[in-house]
Length: 211
Image (cartoon, rainbow, N blue to C red):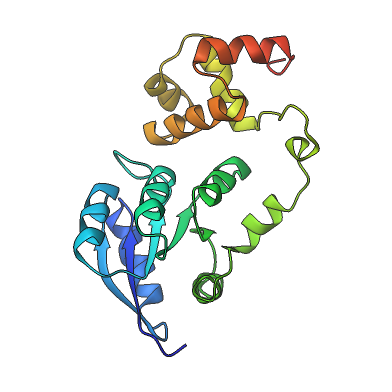
């Protein structure tokens, strides 16, 4: 691995950026050239600068990491994009990878996991930290061409949606961020191929998925 890879770290929490950057500062052949706090600034930055590798949070303001990954890959398919998050739900992981992501690492992963995942991604692999790999390797009902079930968190959010709660009200009640609930909400709609909340609730009730 003789090439010097230029990496950008993106997270809306400065403390996380500082910690991750410090952790990865001594990687061989990898140099952190920029630390950013939003997807908007990232898109602007990569238009003007050569970037080989992006390590970014899944939940970013304005544009989420999942949508951001798709936008980057459409314009810069050669850039390696690895998502990182404190959440390991299968639907988030699979959507990120389907949008072109090269891997998904939990923020709680060890230094060795971060390092190994980054090096393997450079070599062309789709990479996951250990806990994420364990979750996505479990057989799911949707893999058997059945109606997928709701995770516990998705069910909590959907039940509140069925009561007419707004995204912000759900976030407050479940002690989650607005962006987290917004992403879950979008993922649930996509999971069941429904266009809006009313259609979603009708489908779930019809298939006894809200019991």
